[in-house]
Amino acid sequence: MTSKVGPKRLVVGAHYGLRDWLAQRVTAIVLAVYMVLLGAWALFSGPLGYEGWAGAFAPTWMKVATLLALFSLFFHAWIGIRDLWMDYVKPTGVRLGLEVLTILWLVGCAIWSVQILWRV
Amino acid sequence: MSTPTASAKKPRPEFRNIHITQILGYRLPLAGIVSILHRVSGVLLFLALPLLLWMFELSLTSELSYERLRGLAGSVLVKLVLVALAWAFLHHLVAGIRFLVLDLHLGVDKQASANSARAVLVVSVLLAAAVALKIFGVF
Image (cartoon, rainbow over all chains, first blue to last red):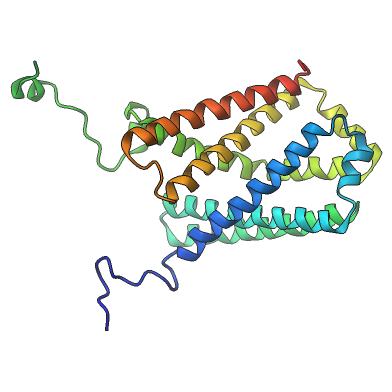
């Protein structure tokens, strides 16, 4: 059996946080690409007006891309805010309560985003 | 010339586990400032999520709601909030790119990291200033 301590320690599996660490970075890249592309498009296409702006979100592919970016945002925010609770809130019960509220809040935002996008 | 006795006379402040009351007396390096601002800007954006989603909804739902949003964005207070959020987003984005590069073990030595931290602060403030000028209708 391999040693459980030292540099050869197996750091994958439950509660080591590697999955969350990676998810935070992958969602960051998805968000960065989406926001930079959207920002550049809005900047270079001149005054859009309602027609131009809402029209951009009409095609299904744009709705899907936007929803993927928003889901990335909510997952990203979950990890960041969870880190905050882990850093600053020590009593387990309070921390659990805050984590549950954060999850409910972000899942609620995700459902709201679906409604916003598919109403266009 | 600094002698051992001189340094014994005036000991450098020593911090172990920083207490909240010591924060202002603790001189952070640039990389530390970028790091804590990354956290602060992330929290700001998280808190502003309902506002941002609501504005996104107004912008898309109908021509009427779009005009309502334009009306809201006419107030100076709303403009200032938008500028603050634009800074938060831009700092989070630019500092985040720096962190991703650091994750690749690039620019991790002391000087390079101080330089990139300074670049992050300058670039994000310049971009936010450009957004602010745009929001206030300078161009």
